[in-house]
Structure formats: C-alpha cells, structure tokens
Length: 363
Ligand SMILES: Cc1ncc(COP(=O)(O)O)c(C=O)c1O
Image (cartoon, rainbow, N blue to C red; front, side, top):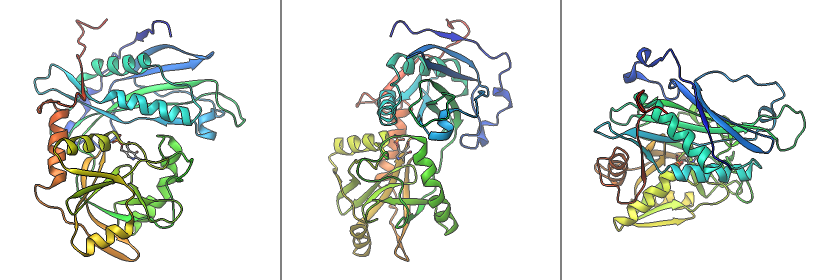
C-alpha cells in the first residue's frame, strides 16, 4: 500500500484523573483514545486516532449476524526508568491476527496499519500504563465485517480498531478446573479453534457457566471426538510437569497458538528442561496424579501470564495438583515478568521499545 497516514484528533477532556488505578476491574476502564481504520473499496484507508467513543452501526451490520470478527490481546509495560514503553512480541500478534483473518475470509491487515496504529496509540496514551506489580496496559486490536447487507457472504467493508485498558493482574489465584466431557470449544480437524475469532468465545460461555455453577473456575477443554485429549483451559494454554518432563498439547486446528505458550517453551528449553509438545490424554494425567508423578500444572496467556492449576475434576472425582513453592510456574513467571518490565536481559529479542509521545514531540 502507499504511505499510510494517521490523522490525530486528541481529547480535550482526559479521564485519567478520575481513575482509581489501585482498584481497576479487568477490562472495565479504557484509555482516552482509540485507533480506527476502515477497509473499503478494496483497500485500507487512512487511519485516525480519536477520543475513545461509541461507534454507530446499522442493524444490518454483517458481523452481528454472521460473526466475521477477530481480535488480538496484547500487553505493554513501562520500563522502570519510565523512558520507554515495552511491547511483548507484537509481531506475533500481528501474524496471528492475519492467520485468523485468512480463516475468517477477511482481508489481511498490512503491517504498517497494525504497527503504526498500535505504536501511535500507546505512545499518546502512555500515562495510562500502570506500573505496580502485575499491572500493565492491555491492548485490544480487533476488526469486523461492517457491510450493511442481510445475506450470508464475506463482507466488502471492515472496521479495524485498537483500544487499550489499564489492568492489574488478571487471575492470580490457583485454578480449579472442570475437565469437559460433553461440550467442545472447537473441532479437531478443519475447525476454527486456532483462530482468534469471536464465535469461539461465544461457544465457550455456556460450558464455562455450567462449570462455575459446579464450583470450578474454568473448563479444561478436551478433543471434540472422544473428550480424552486435553487442549486448553478457559482462554489459556496448558502445561503439566509429569516426572521430569514438561508436557503441553501439540498445536492443532483446535488449539490457539498462544504467544505466552511459545515463549514458555523457548524459555524452558533455554534452561535445558525437557519439553514435549504432544498429545496429552486425561487418563495419563489421572494416572500421573495417582502415582505421584504429576508435579505441577499451570496455564498461560497474555492476560493471566502464568497461573497454577490446583485441582481438576474428571469422571466424578477431584484430583489435587501439587503447587510447589519456588516451582516451575514461579521460575517462568519471574522470567517473563522480568523480561516484560525490562528488568531481566531480553536474550530472546522479544521486546519492542516505543517512545512515549509528549505534547512536544507529537507530530
Ligand atoms: C483460547 C485461548 N487460548 C490461549 C490463549 C493464550 O494466548 P496468548 O498467550 O497469546 O495470550 C488465549 C488468549 O489469547 C486464548 O483466547
């Protein structure tokens, strides 16, 4: 595409002083601005940064009916000296967004639209990035079909938006999980589980509600055929340490390729841990639990980072999972949090620095 321009229209009424940063509920508070870009006439138009506001849509908006809607979730922090904004592996979110777009038959986002929109937005709203332990700025890029047409076909128009929420740690308490044997999040062959599309999350809500009613925090998803192979937990990937080996389900059509998952595998391998990406059968997990070989389990994701599983329920029985002090979850968490905050050397080349914009350097 030709050179991409962003028009900047700043708010005259910042909300920042009305926010109690110590007590933010996840996803309930947003920063002052948003980035918006339209796809129409077969191409992405110039973008705009403008005050966070409602968007007006026709009742015929295609995404509301047929679900062509995809998103990403990413985080940034401030460096300890406050000089830089630190983004964690943004190019992976960019790639995954386009992977989702392809599967949902949507036009790909050009790299400069994604990067410049993202970087300009967080540079402008940098004062919203909280700095306490576990906190950060959660960034939500998403786009959806915006044709006003009541017919099932891929849309011609799309709206891409990025907005941000200051957040504290998401769920840091160890989780109890319900191993799902009735419902599925995604189908194994040819399905859409690997795409970050809105419908996957809609499909997960009813089983998650039932699990909560039974007293469990999350659903542990299993394969859609036999409900025996473990896939993910809630909206996170899953790891189990069995004996001296760390096992995580191998990627497939039904598993979201988590960026935290991949980072954990890379980190653990760099420390010479043995990591296996393979099928993980619930019966293997039960057996490992009974014979004492199950040493620790945790889930991983951008919002949650890394959280222990303390218990899982399968076939009318609860299995307690050890949560060793200074265990692997702690080692991983320390490393990831340290790298993300710029306190530990980023030997993997994961971090991207963005300079905050002040009124002096705002182009
Ligand atoms: C279904 C699902 N699995 C796993 C993850 C973890 O992915 P990531 O580590 O990239 O946040 C997420 C969160 O995006 C998710 O929604």
